Length: 334
Image (spheres, rainbow, N blue to C red):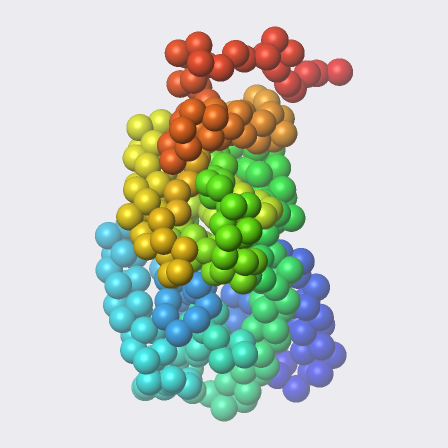
């Protein structure tokens, strides 16, 4: 690519701004960086919690490393990135490595690391800096539209698209680079509701209610793994996709959250509990049925004492719920 060709540059800029989902934006950005630096090694990280600390997801690594090598590299890079954040660092350069923080409005959205010869080429660095600026702005726009403004979790609109995509194909949500391919290929969907939230709002006011929602989101982020997906479904309800687990592990993860909330003292409010219902994500039924099943299990938990976790399939097996006759096979061929 001729670095003096302004029309080519403009096309690349437009390509970045045309991306309408985060995965597509990551891929386009990586492709452009590799086009600019064909002989370098590249690693791109995305911060799941844009703030003054990081939970980094490895979005791209160029080398064909095995799982152990990838995890070792992630540990090394995570220490580097957290140290960079602590000192409010800018671009750092060595003889063969350049680290570019991905910063939007003083929040760290991730880090780009490039290694190899000529990484400090001034002309290329100038264009790369422009790519990064456009990438940052587009990432901020997408995250703003995809995330709930109060809790920072994914919003309802993102949930609808994610569940539909996940259920449209067994391969629709690819495993992350650091995941073990021997993990179960089943996913579970859970609905969580804060018990007696209306009473909490009535007694302490909506401002404290918002504080509880924010604290709840932070507890959820601590309780779940990086590969799991957390959504604010609406009001005091949250939706959770627990990925690559069997029934036993899904129950353990959700129960761990319930216990974590139960042990938390919320400022000015005191004790808060949650009820959770969950079900397997079955590709042979409609997304609406998956939601309905988790909701039925949630309703059972709330009607039978609250502060509980229940699985829809277990409730059906134990005859505590009755499976509707008309949902044996939601997906029909016409």
